[in-house]
Amino acid sequence: MYDLVICGGGTAGAACGYIAAKSGLKTLIVERNIHLGGSITSALVVPAMKSDRQGVNCDFYNDFVKKMSEFGGQITYSDGNDGWFNPEIAKIVLDDMLTEAGCDILFGTDVAEVNCKENLIKSIKVNSKILSLYIDSRYFVDSTGDGNFSMLAKNKILENYKNFQPMTLRFHVSGINLEKFSNWIMELDKNREVTTSYTIDGEIHLSTACTWDKSKNWALWDIFEQAVNNGDLEEADTAYFQLFTVPGMRGTVSLNCPRIITGREIDPLDASDVSKALIIGRKQVWRLFKFMKKYFPGFEESFISNMADMLGIRESRRIQGKTVYTKKDILSGKTYENPVLNADYPIDIHSYNKDTSVLDKVKQPYQLPFEALCASDYENLFIAGRNVSADFEAQAALRIQTSCFSMGEAVAKHVANLLNG
Image (cartoon, rainbow, N blue to C red; front, side, top):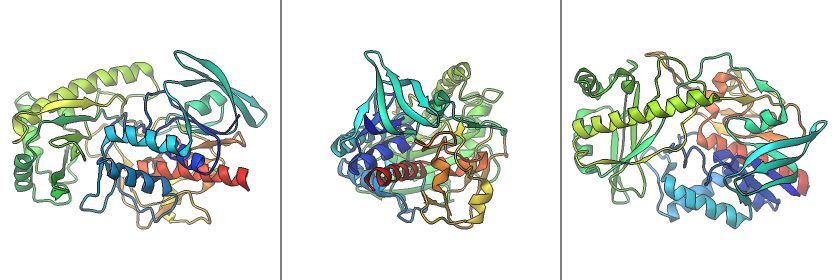
């Protein structure tokens, strides 16, 4: 018998497990992959996007940043973003944090069955390659990202009446002469909202970007266009390009691309669609790598050192909660007595088509009510992560890692209050 079983050990799930175990709850994380961290580790989504947190449910995040720094896997960039993480070190750090806190973890394990009685979940059946067992718990958390646990429990699902957002398959390139590349890109692009480079802890760290959207005058665009004309890239490869250096990985950049374009929208919940997207994405990775090696000074001796083993999925399935948080709630700046989080990340909707992506900045920080983390049909099921009970636009602001950390932490503290009085 557990106090809390967390299904999914990604960003929200890891934060939830850590805070719950530290609060004295007997806690279990059921994770289908072989490490924690989800988007950070499996999908290589680094750095974490910066947001105005104001200390609301940030205990896990602050401890994570501190521990990552101790392991040499974190830096604070010039804009004050302390979420520049090393994905490989994060796997080790998360293990360390969760086990020290006393949280049990089952890796390589899926939830196969959910046993309910009226409006309570009583137990679950989990399967792995070597075991199958039933687990009882007082409370459960769906932090699966895709809402798979809530689907098994037959909780209501919010309909997606909007178009799907494109997926990304991120990768790392190493063996780069970063000094040579930094000198070149900083001379080429004078826009410091797009391209920056600094020496931090004795190492060069930088960032740059280019997209096919004409909202900005991208300094790299002429080079991308030349590569398309020369047959080195396809037009789809120019849709979105962004790179960052990685703490503790000298001479390495992490690519926030390719945006996978197939000629039609890809359903992130359709296995056939996802399989095709992975194949197409890896072809795009190869073309982008060859492009950088040919056109970017400093990349002459570079090589692909890692490809994500999970697609970067921005939105797939959202769970019906006691309340549905909306774009109107975000723009209103409404506050709550005990908010889940405080954030100012914009409404960020990626598109398959040119000049149709949305990045709506907010005028003031917004908060999230706890009712959006409470499943509509069960009294002991909570939601944490990108499957939050929110409409399409609101989810596009809430899906970032820092907000998911806070959601997981808020659930853990709530359950601890219920059980510890």
